[in-house]
Image 1 (cartoon, rainbow, N blue to C red):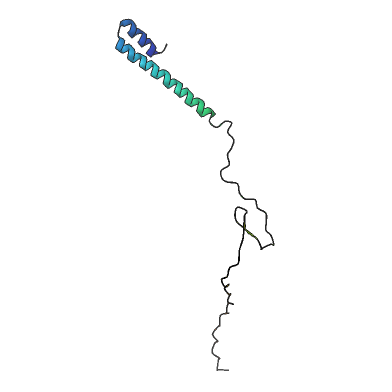
Image 2: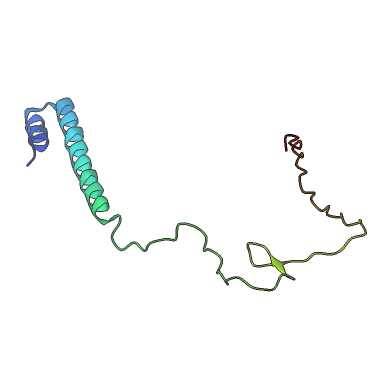
Amino acid sequence: MSEHVAKFVDDLAAGNNAEAGEAFKDALRDKVATSLDQARVDIAKNIFTGQVEQPISDPKPEYTGPTDRTDQVFDDQGQQIEFVPNENPQPEAEAPQAPVEAEAPADETQ
């Protein structure tokens, strides 16, 4: 018997009902606390056993490799992006001009 139960029985035999009630509460608290501690230990031992690893993020799109075709454009979800010509004039690209170097003055000593 635990010390709380022994005190409970002794207090009941002596007629100390108030103290027996407190001893009973203490015995019950001790028993519940012990059970909870054991349940925590059991859960801690088994929390990660038998778990299947979960994927961390969304699956990555499948890489299909480079292609020579440039007439189709796809988004990151693999859906084709359709381009429709509009009535706006297309900009003209300007040809870059080569920088002009300043000519060095002719050496007149020759």
